[in-house]
Length: 159
Image (cartoon, rainbow, N blue to C red; front, side, top):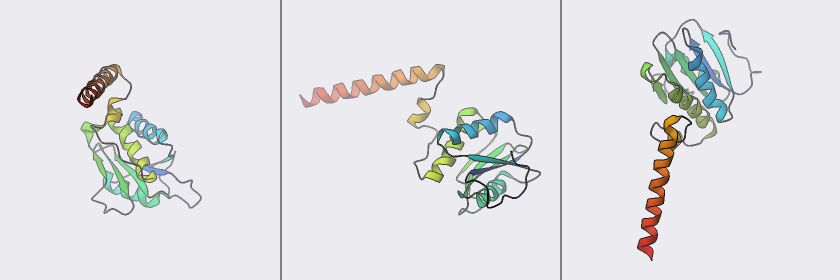
């Protein structure tokens, strides 16, 4: 983990995560899980001051991948930023109400997807329905039933 020092050119390509404490370890872990699932490494830097937007922008500027995440633990905000965007216009802004594992994991995954040029994951996409958990099987079953019904209706119409 970083100590807030400037990165050097020898740093491995990674999404930079700049963090202003206090931040729960589960917040950082959830974001890193999303990045890891997409196969993109992260480097964490702890800093003494800064708002999430400015931290995200600086993280992106210091990342060889041009993507950064800023987390302001005091304001309970996290942003996904890109080097080419204005500081006040991050790609995503998560406020305290979104500091839950699924949302934060999505933030990490979307960071990696920006790097790779893959489609982004939004809150109401199918990928959220397929996450593991007690309600996930019910949602998968409902989706499967709907697909079977639609295919059966289509087949009945074409015969």
